[in-house]
Image (cartoon, rainbow, N blue to C red; front, side):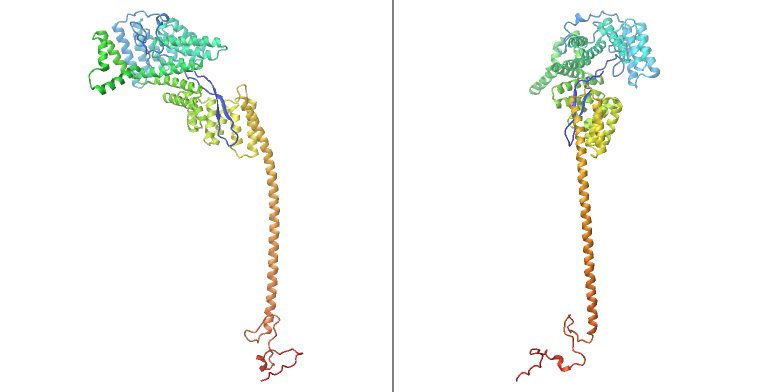
Length: 603
């Protein structure tokens, strides 16, 4: 039986506005389920042996170690009448138990061994009508082998509390809660001394009724009945961790946080006492004695001497000492204890979460997962808080584990998508959101998250943005009374933002087109200029070539000129062949005075 409590918003890592990703009623329940007696787990077929001849109870006298005092228990539960059990009957029962335990050690009670072990208890039950435990175990073995119907036939009509309680458990498993509740009440009325399992299961049914009560008065009534049953369980069995864990969650659910924390811590201490066989004050005493022994040397006194003094040396004292020694050996932390402790740690995590102590809450949920990795509620709680803390790896790991156990868990499916997106696994996140949508197409959350993917993590172009808008509109279309108004406004704002982005994109496209046109014209002008320059360079080259050709022709007429004779344009031509050789080196004629002959220079 699981339940949901509070709603938590998961922040997302965005470059744009911060928005909400996931606002779900996560499964924060205590994870308590109805218990069958002697079926599965590490339990033996009979949680009690052949019965206590003195009182028939599972515990001893009340002590100050008990969380809930046994004071007044005699008024609640009648004392069991002494049963006449012979030594032979007890020996036969013990042999049947040993056979069962040997089968368990060798790999489990299966096949033909199942019938033979069950028959061993049947023989004891047939010969000893005063041992209903034997008849119960006959059915419990068959139930463990999967032969539920055969077990039910044996238990029907048996006036023994655990047998009736198991019939109630079977009814609950079939989806018949009213029949289950009726059978649990019948077990309590028929056999109040052996009603631990029936009361534990009834308390959980009453707890769930309280959670769905239509009025506070009705809720208080159901809670009162549940608490009374749990107190009675602890009066019968002060070590019953399931009663502690259920009681702690009821107090949490009633917002009695300090009481929930107190009972939860008592459960942890009780488990430690069971595992180690030592009470808290024993440990304090041992620590004190250890210090004293270290100072005073081995005086031979201490706890051992104290016990011997208390024993008085008589048989009664010797028996007490033996029981204490056995208890001090402890049971170790069994798998059944771990499951109940996991529920306790999960509840303590919820208490811290309600107080807004996030880090301590995460620590408690981690302890719960360590104690029982199969407690889906604890993993889901750890995953959600890890997501809020942006610890995407832890979130992804635990959401995946929840989905392995509960493939149809919509919250885990959505949460895994958020964790994948946080780890930048965008394509996987989109696939995960689509898977979640198939699990519950009516839920709005997959549509919102898909909108985020297409708006913030795709290419930012119109087709992607159009798809994002479509998802946001589907989200609004599927919104219900549990959908927060702020998230609806967020979706509406995003749709509007995308419309504005469209305008911006159109404007940008227009500007881009204008820029491209200007660039095109500039390129054309550049090309024209380059072509004009090329033409001018070609013309100049042609003119130069033409001038050179004329010069080459003029050089041919001056073929007889002496080397070094001037060839520049406009230079006087060289003397002809018929010129006076003497005039060749003469200075130029002085043409002043109209070109007459130069006067001779007087000597």
